[in-house]
Length: 179
Image (cartoon, rainbow, N blue to C red; front, side):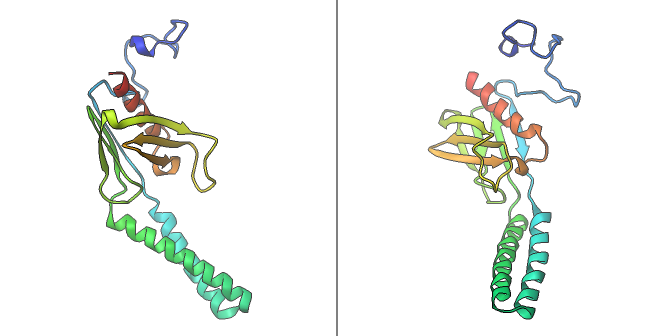
């Protein structure tokens, strides 16, 4: 176990002291200084497609069959379906994005399926942390927040393929800050 990973009691933290940081899946917990960590984001194409189809069908049915109040509800459903269709279009136009921490270079996507990522130098990253409680109801907690170049990049839990991907990015940024 590396000295910077040891617990306060000197017991190694996880109950073993065999010198490696491998999990059962064979991947390292964090990148070595100067190492490369790339985490792909996951799009929500299925959810957008469902909202487009179901919201559009219900909206059309409400507009055609119901009275004034139902027509208003139908228009709202059609607007939500149009928004979902736009988001679905973006998933086909741009890849979801990849967070890359590579030595002194960091590449952060501006959002999910938003085109080219924003490149930064390591010195421009001022903070990286999790928001666990102060999360808007529209996002899944925890939200990974990376502050770089005067901007804050927020990555909700549902943008990642697995639970450990957010932690890998945070650990890579922390190891890089120590190095």
